[in-house]
Image (tube, rainbow, N blue to C red):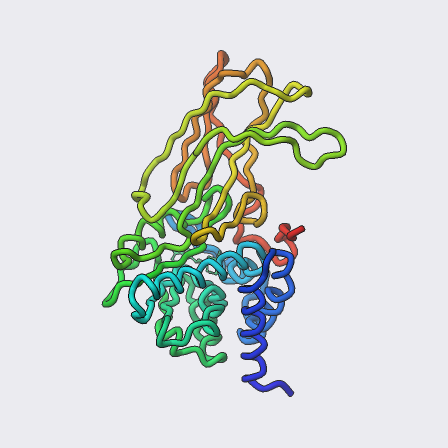
Length: 351
Ligand SMILES: C[S@@+](CC[C@H](N)C(=O)[O-])C[C@H]1O[C@@H](n2cnc3c(N)ncnc32)[C@H](O)[C@@H]1O
């Protein structure tokens, strides 16, 4: 029979493999192992049929089961674990070896981004405050912390709304949150960033450091190719710790000349998450960086103005096209929101 310390060692080894992985493919097995160990430690709670998400004004808070399934978005998990590790090391240097306080907003039931760090840093180097809006997630996170004897690393576990939460006592050196869908639609990453970035100490690090949405053109692929050539069009929106709350962002582009022999091209929006330093989740490598198709256009549309409007937390990203014809406003949406994902629906398997 395996003892608690065997399981703790296995969990630590799996996280170490994720930290050392050179590619998403190399992280699949250890992430699956971590998922299983945490799922077992939670006593099999977080059934995948649970749809208990909460609709806030600023976006949808994913259900405990949806949050648990996010662990299996491999490149997302790998780069957040690695980026936060690097951010803690940097904060230790910057803040002259103070005990680094990390506020983890939206920890979900498994709190994986914090738990991952507990084998690299002792509790006199880093401590986490785990926070989630869902009681079930907070309860399970508490049970996991208890079960792996990590109470000194994670002394505070709080149920609160991160879009409103104000820090009591010492301010964090780092805030980490992953509460986003691709193109920052549906979920409250922008509102949480705007609320919690000012709560940090001066010189604090917000993880992710930047989420950038860019418009680009893609030519239809030639036969025998999966993707067509891509050309950048311009920035739609950038979220950093300095982005002000409730900013309604509008960007405008003129549609360029069509180059494709097929006579039409596609307009899309990419998402790139720079977690920390040079650790990034590139477009179309994870669920949270899937590109969003906006529209196709042909030679008749060349020079037409396209205006895009991003409202943080809105269910839709809107765009309007101004050509010679009638003014057209369209709302873009992904077919599924992440709270409804099940393990099998996470489609991004690294190549
Ligand atoms: C996508 S899951 C991420 C879970 C976990 N951090 C991970 O990386 O696997 C997002 C989590 O954020 C929580 N959340 C979303 N909005 C929140 C809010 N306003 N306040 C607190 N928690 C929130 C959800 O309940 C959910 O557990």
